[in-house]
Amino acid sequence: METRTILVLLGMLAVPCALANEAYVWTDEDGVVHYSDRPHPGAKRVELQAPNTSRSPARRSSAAEAATDDDAAEPAPPFRYESLEVASPGPEETLWNIEGTLNVTLALTPALQQGHQIRVYFDGNPRIVNSTTFQIDEVWRGVHNLQAEVLDETGNMMIRSRTNRFYVQQNTVF
Image (cartoon, rainbow, N blue to C red; front, side, top):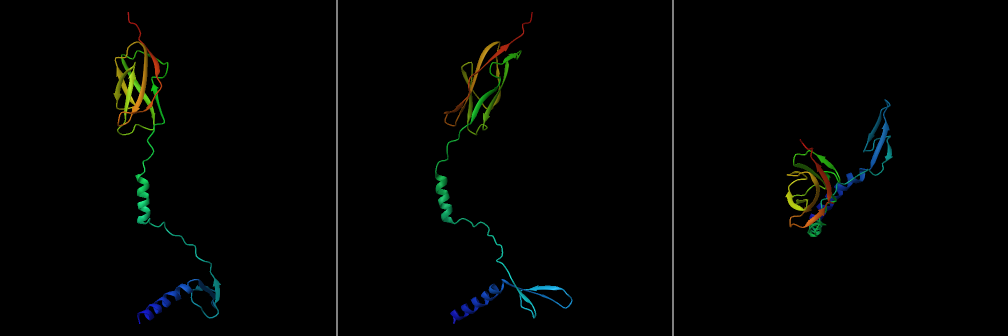
């Protein structure tokens, strides 16, 4: 008995699906054109093309998610900086009357990552700075060298700039 009920229900569901691709057109006595999905006396059957349909992207199955999680477990390629330069003072630049304070700007691409540090060598003496712009005090007249490098969380050098030589001049007051 249950099988018969299921077959009848399936048959009832199939009828609208079968008729869904049929349309009829006719013109009434007033000249108005009518369209319908049901036959009408004097109506002509219109052949319909298959409708344009699209599906939204299916949600990934848990097996696909597990495979992606395994892929995520593979180590990502190590982070790398593209370039590091001492932007200011420029190479071979002469600075006048800086009153002992040197303003330094580094050009680092990409930006400094969290946990990384910058070590600067001013005339061979290392110091750690927290930014790509900083000041060095007690810079007096003469020839000076400046170089920078970025260190990762473990203290390993990741990138190093070229050494920048620059000059400081002071006017003499008599």
